[in-house]
Length: 216
View 1 (cartoon, one colour):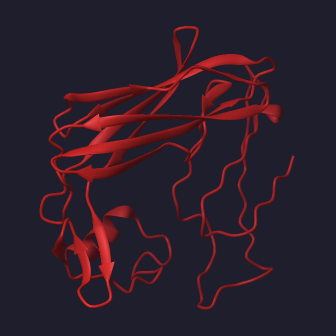
View 2 (cartoon, rainbow, N blue to C red; view 1 turned 90 degrees about the horizontal axis):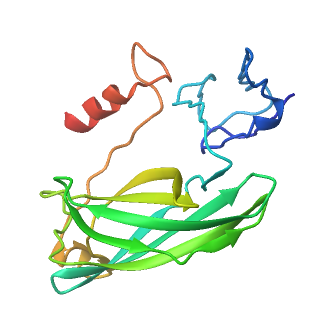
């Protein structure tokens, strides 16, 4: 089977369940063909980003669907939590989603749970919840405090899928006269003009080289 995908600048995924030989040997081949089009500069071709082969339960969290949105109020923060549960099975399943919020030291600071819902076969359902984060530590450039949300999808009392989402609590505003402010304080944003190549490695830049660029 051939599953074409056009474009190399955004992530994508393919479900290969229907062609996998379970219990036997499988060979997966990925080919890049840049002959049809090219970008505004010479970019070369090839696979130079991370690739994963992911195994998951038929009832699982949607890819790139979990989020945490924070609203600051005094010293505490309100968290709007959400995700999507996908059912690739042949029968509807009753599912529920829980969130466990941890601080930077791994201590639990709050939890939340969405109401249970039935997820039809070959369909998906959105789950949302709210939580309060007391005495929230703000994220800033000088103090990059991060929290972790452990999102867990369950059915019949059994965890079927889970993931970790890191997030920071902060306020960000833009003003035509004052510029950008982070947590109520003016901040000058500095960036880089980063071309997709480097001496010695071409377009296949490893992560550690990107970190090197930011550090010099």
